[in-house]
Image 1 (tube, one colour):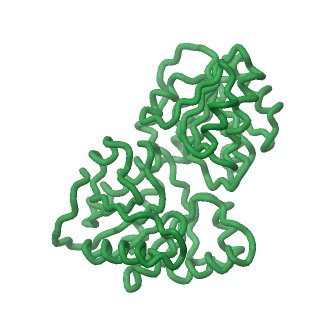
Image 2 (cartoon, rainbow, N blue to C red):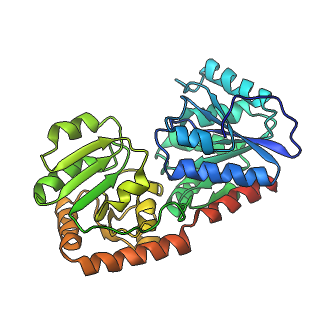
Length: 351
């Protein structure tokens, strides 16, 4: 349960996660943090979480075995106020381990955490070019382990100059106890759960809805493209915004779409759909073709015609939808259990 920080003697150490992003839902990553904090507690490691704003989900705050701190996002690499805020959290919590996840805050956290064990996770494919190479090389020089959420991300980090022996590829996975198949009433509901920003392919959803007028296309999530979707959405498309009940929403869908076109690491949205046994139509990006090509229907990025035809096929052919959904659930259980990632992280913390 989250609470205000209080001084407490800890036997083995304290892990402070610097998130660098605002937690807006109670999704798979929040549940991953929840499970990770619980496993750390079993081993004598206390967990603290640093967010730029208070997490939106009260369920997450109530359930996670971690103290939550708020430090505003860094505005630039030399943002002294962000550096001082993180340094103060590290000192007050007697941090022994610092694990940074996103953005400029990861750079500042690596510097402010000098003298402590330092870890990084890269959640998206890194940018190309000299500036990205210099940044990631510097990060790699500071961190003990650089976790990559996919093989593609790991390869890109090494190409940019991060020492190969420091890169550890670990799929974050999904909690298959929370996300699991439920009885469905057949309908014609297509669901996309995604951050509404460029690179996620969500701009294709209005066209998908127009191409399939007898179906309902649902967008769950928020972001800078939400006004565009709301403006262009036809009558059979719903833009729901953020949802705290994704397991229930997934259970109401017939097809899940993941039309990303950008720098995807390994999206957790399709993994959640995988675990619930939904047929998934996704673009062939990152590691999806090699690790989930048999459990998803893959299409070229940006191909709205292929997206439309695949959705139509699974809406009309219930047997094909069930067959692919069964393979999806099996893949989630066998290849993407969150327990694998938990133990990979914990083994490095305890090494």
